Length: 304
Image 1: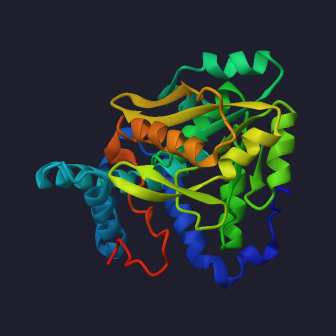
Image 2 (image 1 turned 45 degrees about the horizontal axis):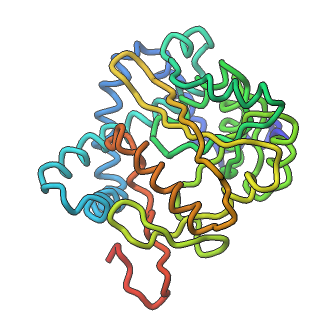
């Protein structure tokens, strides 16, 4: 159910949230070039204010790319911080930009793969990666065909209201991450649905499979469940900021997927995720503790 506006949102408890919303909404109307400049500055604030996340990003790059020189990793990290700041503004762009402005900044590659599956009367399950511009890019994707997304509710009720309705500006509705049957039903109804399989969701329903230079990364098998149980076919999506805007790149799914061997399937999925990350590694969400869960709980943390 879509969250409704509550009069309690006007209470002092939410005044700081309202201040942030008004500030971001105002910035969203500035010229795009100005927002890019502000985004870089905001990235430096994030580096200081969320320094632990900065260190997580640094560590992830060390774990994933040990063969890179320190200078190469430092360049990716510096650009990643800029993109983290811009991601905040891209969220406001996705929630509040008018349709004409969104359309002017978005383009597609490979959308014929979506159309081919829909022509068969099947749902489309798109595995997307956590590039930091995804919030805006999903809004762009909805201009082609309104979609359904699997998501986690925001803890702040006012932000949950804004997030839900902002994301649905050009899409249909969202399904709470606990509502597995809801997403299966949407796929059976022939919807285009998004699922993000590239984070560490813990040991429950996971397999340990290689990801870049880390031999055992906890990888969810939840992504396989939907493909097994729904009348659908799968694709992959990477959203990339370009010099002129945003490109939504859609790639074919894996053959014989799911195969019945979960570890084999998530290993192949991680390999595809690697390929998509490498399109623009500086735009990926490295600030997430992707390798937090270890096969042996007694094993020392990879994050110190």
